[in-house]
Length: 242
Image 1 (cartoon, rainbow, N blue to C red):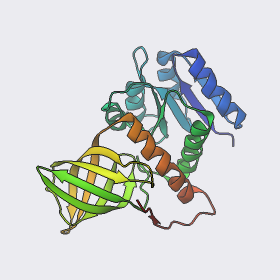
Image 2 (image 1 turned 180 degrees about the vertical axis):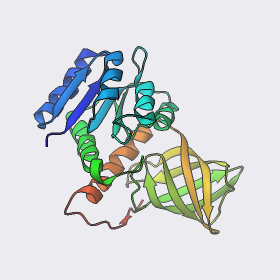
Image 3 (image 1 turned 45 degrees about the vertical axis):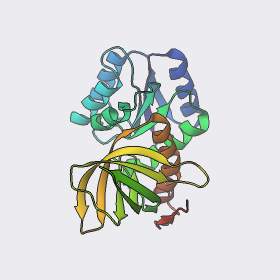
Image 4 (image 1 turned 60 degrees about the vertical axis):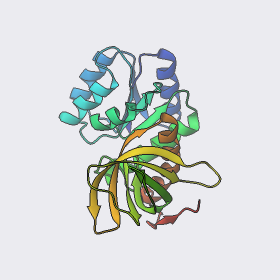
């Protein structure tokens, strides 16, 4: 069965570019520049993935994502937000509305196709908002003058499970840096401690991270997600050396 994709962007050039790439990949595409029309399609039709521009006349992409998650045919459909806004809190608002991935302008075809492959792989297999990947990366955490070294046990686009010598209390905001790939600089973010496991593990929810760093995390995690969702893959933890 051919996958059906909804693309909504009030910029006709961006809308046409995404549509062209998806059509070339053999997909059926409904491409719209009017968000009110998109709301009607989301309410009455099932899509395999949805691409939404964040900044549009009401309802904007965040509102459309929220409506899709609250009921109807697309409560579980992967949602990719198309964003050009540099507001570091933007991705958190989108995640809260139900978005799964980001596509920052300007983007190229390869990045679009990589995200598309992930959404297609997760349609049948992924039932959580965010795919968690077992991956070990070095992490430095700091809060109120106390610093701790540790490593991730798993990561997703909105958080991570960290094993460290020092556990911070639940609810505390910590600054962290994560070494994804050497020799690239670490990703920096502020995260809230959502839970603790034993004396040395913390579940962290990302609250503040720059668009550039969320894009770097996405580029790092997407190939790992693909390795879990594609048929011939083996789910093995990945050791990343900084």
